[in-house]
Length: 270
Image (tube, rainbow, N blue to C red; front, side):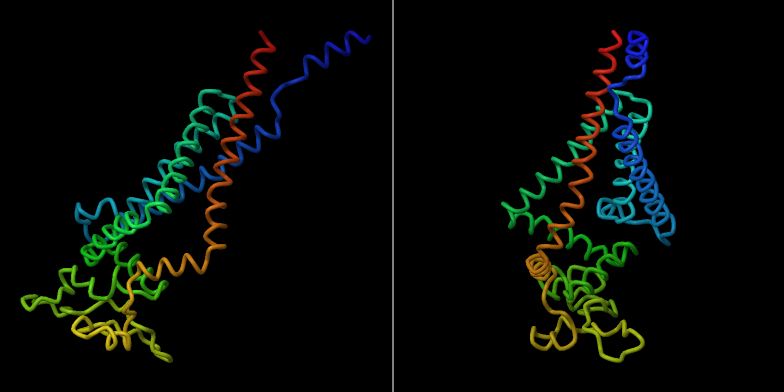
């Protein structure tokens, strides 16, 4: 009797913990659905644009960035989903390796950005300059720049005169644009009680000196404002960084545990 009981226990015993397996599956499935939403948002934004974007703006196009991020997430989480569900070691290894590479890349960018802050600032400056140059060429890019300037109460990268990089706002005498020497309305300081936004509030601002400009627009650049914002919101920045890191670390650890359990299960059957 005891021998039969021991044999039944041996047959029902498994090295694979179902809690870890199904938690990893639902964890991956959640982010898999999220990746599909990101791709859908990117495709929708790209299709809904009235005009085609310039080739030079392709890499900074928010719609393209959304699609690329979504596709990468889809591939990684698909491997985690199917790997956990089917107990497939190869897919789980791809999932774990991909997550590890993404995590280490993010960590390297953060470390390099901290120790090489001047070079990071220059790189971001080039990105913003390209966004300013093509401000009127891409609606998503325009909305992104307007949002940043309104939220950070800034104008341009270094200061409000950076908008002279743009063809329409360029302040040279030969510029025939009606927006010559102006800045976008998102640079303007809000007027209390104003019901309708005055989109012409930034006209001619570049011809004014710094003190005069501060009366109507945010004269300070977004570079300095971003640094000040980070320094005054260190807890929030740290929380966001932790929020990005923890799911990735959890995915790596759980997948490695499941891989080890599957290998132990295979070894016990041989």
